[in-house]
Length: 111
Length: 115
Image (tube, rainbow over all chains, first blue to last red; front, side, top):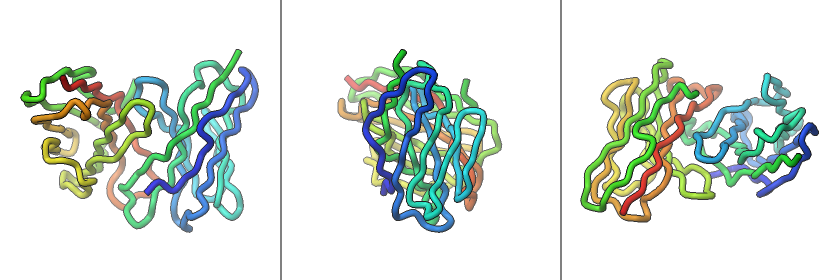
């Protein structure tokens, strides 16, 4: 039931912005987009979520297109500690507890 | 640090053993989840409890038996496992039913090895 598509891997230079894309073309009007990341051998860490407006918190920014069919997670100044697998998840409205992970993007931050 | 605590961190068991994984949260969440994660794969949903009742079973084999004794605790009882069941088992919790705008909070998992 994964409803998202992400590139398998991306590289980013340390100190630069990392822009991670996600396609969710079948998203419904009341379904939220969530982003998590998972550093090796740890549990997934919540980053940010949004419905239609752009969102920002201390970790990242989330840009959602006007048609809501895609979004971008922005880490403004990537550090080596941001190296992780980043998951984009759509929380389906027909069964909100079916919180399915897609395949994710491995972000490699390089010095 | 995580607000969802899982024990043990590591577990090695034989195929004839019975063991249990434990998960605890004190955030007042009423939905709790078990996920299984194989190496280099995303987490896969196994079970969901809502208000201490099993609401989702993703066709998990009966050798995995979940239990939610109260709103803060979630157990996963293991019996007669196979080596292919070796994985990272993750617990998560979230606010009550009907809240789409509510993140899941994950523990750091139990690394299970079946010999």
